[in-house]
Image 1 (cartoon, rainbow, N blue to C red):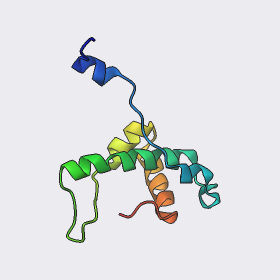
Image 2 (cartoon, rainbow, N blue to C red):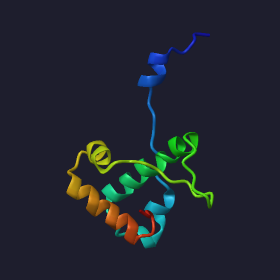
Image 3 (cartoon, rainbow, N blue to C red):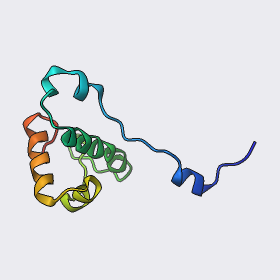
Length: 96
């Protein structure tokens, strides 16, 4: 059995998870695809938040994802990120 190198791990396929509710629940039917993708990227950051102990006094996890970084990751402009985040907020998926 061959050992797996760091390079293999770094270049192997990794995935973002999209909650089925975003695709199947009629409530989210009109949520734009880029907002669903942004939610998946944001949701993925919870792992980093937990490892950094970014948890408030109520036990709620918060995350740090600058608009510039999200814009870069989605390949959109900063104004588009603001619109996406507003849409996520309207659907109760993001609180700032």
